[in-house]
Image: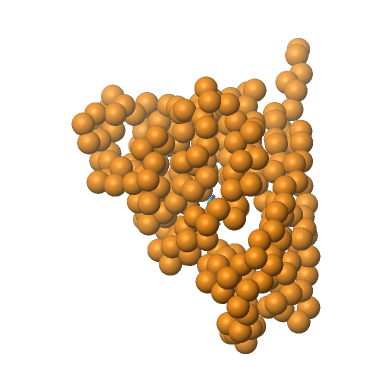
Length: 261
Ligand SMILES: C[S@@+](CC[C@H](N)C(=O)[O-])C[C@H]1O[C@@H](n2cnc3c(N)ncnc32)[C@H](O)[C@@H]1O
């Protein structure tokens, strides 16, 4: 996949310890292996080390491997894949495409990703200003993360596919039952992207009996962690184990047919 200089947009080429463009803009590769192309001192520095650690500990137990396997079925080895907001690369590293780039703003996430996975180029950058050339990816994927609609459309090849993974209606419902007096189902709607349509919805689900530690890690991975009252949070502390359902939808987006003139 062609990496574009974040300053002048010219292609970047790998040299010893860095990437350079023809205008001599040069970017060092961090010792862990990721490439820092983030020029802005943005307030958003992605997930913090505690969030990354909780997610890593939970995912490493394999609870979401059924999801990873399903997504892998949608990929081909000889394709180029861009994982937007890849976190610590838990999914990215096992995706079967040979040419892979993962982007995230979390340094602690990318340190883990690039240490564990030498087969993917991990780039520190905002997904809303991706340092990649136009029409350079066969597949772009976003898993439980913000959707950078304009960048997805710019970077995808015209016959490419955008894969969006999002929670389904009953995802983590048992966790919400344990936390809240009035648990609610997730509202799931199609997310429109102008000029694209959803070709397929693929629901996938599984469940698992989770320990106290798993529940804590899982809870920290969710948006509920920041919105739940201290009172409700304490309810989890008295639960030793709980069976929880994991329900996702994988949406496949393709460009609308170009009308011939
Ligand atoms: C819920 S996590 C999902 C991570 C990964 N896709 C997964 O499912 O394991 C959301 C990720 O989005 C990243 N993120 C949030 N805003 C971002 C932005 N503007 N640019 C790049 N990454 C961003 C966070 O650092 C975090 O790693």
